[in-house]
Amino acid sequence: MEKRSWLSGPEIPSQFDDDGAPSRWPGEKLGLPEHGEGSLASVMRRVGGITIDWFFAMFIAIIIGQLSGNGQFYAPSLTLGIFVIISIVSVALFARTPGHMMLRMGVARIDAQERVGLWRSVVRAALTVFIFPPIIVDADGRGLHDRATGTAVILG
Image (cartoon, rainbow, N blue to C red; front, side, top):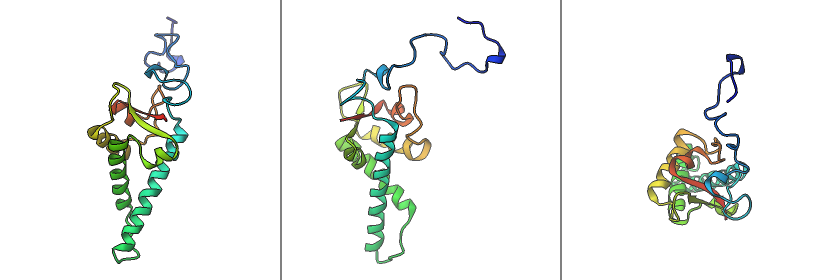
């Protein structure tokens, strides 16, 4: 272990514990392949997916506003509610949102070969919307909402 002084700045937890600690590719420590189907989706691809989902929710909110008889009706909170519903239902049933599907991604559990399930979908959507955006990632390259629910967005 190297001798450090206060001049070196703060120490990142476990920074000096293991020389081989950094992953060679995102998702390596999770047992995911480096490339191809089953590998961790990039942050930019995930941002693209969430953008598609948001526009899809906005489009549905505008249609609801038009059908309600008030052509000016468009509430951002309606878009948010529709976005949450789309996220929960589509991930619970199909393990992917419409944006994920268009960009060939899906949500998978990393701890078991089982479906994501309803409660993980609800927690994942709530964390995405209310606490931290999915572009904040951990050392493995997963969104923090995925880390909290034991899931990962993978290609496939």
